[in-house]
Image (tube, rainbow, N blue to C red; front, top):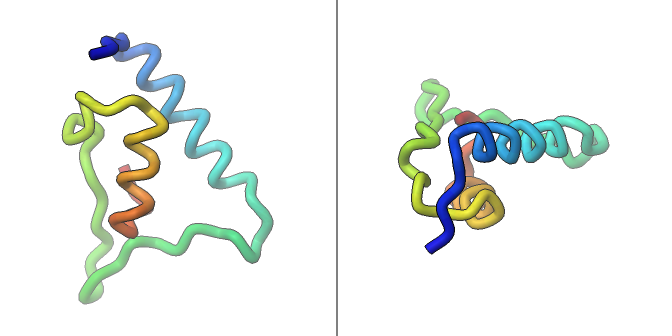
Length: 66
């Protein structure tokens, strides 16, 4: 299992979300709102995942907030 530091995780997470915000307007990520409440996830939930696997999991869940 690969261990990464908080700094590496944060940098990867920042890069991933920067990439999401730089997409074209048609590809914009919609807020994850369910029943009128915006839902997100804590990055701690994915502490054992690689950054790429974490992003894939968050997208597959339909969440846009971390």
